[in-house]
Length: 386
Image (cartoon, rainbow, N blue to C red; front, side, top):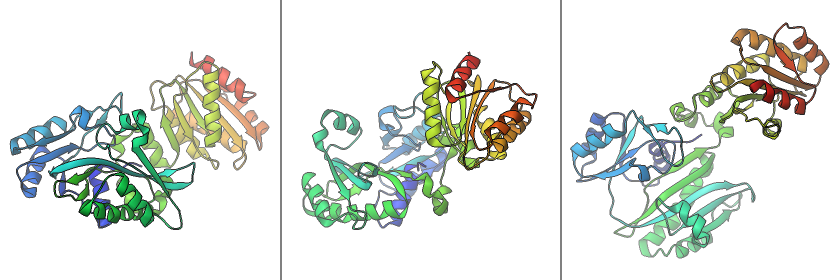
């Protein structure tokens, strides 16, 4: 689950980390009021969306008059902002963040993320921070520094010093960085984050280090114990079908094809999509209803899949291990009747009570295509979608 910048900075401040003063605003009037409250003779107005690259497309701008604060807010609010990270449709801007400006001497890059290869939290830093960090990582990877943290010890003093030296920090900036990094690690662990990215981390004209921007992602698997964080979810920033799936606790990812997939198990879902591709089709989604799927979750799955107007056929692939195939078959029959499915439905059942499940489908009187194997199911789904 991604957070907005203003939310991420609130979490940083709760961890005793200083950030630029800023106020989120939902209207142009509120933005002007926020600028007046902050004071000063210049402000930064930032679109709040769950995507990077805002600065390159006009979503972040320094303004020096209150009239310009209003104009900038009006140009952003209520409209989609399209960046290279959220193409092709962009994301709606419902809030802007109005912040004080700072005298910036240097821009650095710093992030903490879960490194799945080492099974540790990795710290990534670079002296070449700012909007083009992706290009830096691609063209000059030697400029990107990495330290991995022992899960028992966390970030160590020698790692802070090594990164500070490599970033050529001196004096107060050196001290600030070595103090900041352990604080960020504690915030990362305490909130079950999968990503904490600060780009840029700035060195100010008076040689202090401060997070100017912040991106946070929370591990979805930990939200059950992070209720306060789960309430920060902004479903307007994700696909409507994914938002509906979140509401009923099933795993859904929208894709660009025309064959809807409903599978119990993430690995089986990936294999199903691969076979569809192999047979010349394109999956419309990844949908994992879980190992303990019930007739209710199957019905919800159908509803979510059919929210996509591009779906021309639905492939259901169920392996009955934890849940019996006859129970799933009953759920499919109930869902087809309840939802009013008007596209071909191909079903492959295997496992506990698979024969009974197939018998229930055959006797249902519904236009459900029974497949003998997964390969057969993929072939029939591709034909049906055409």
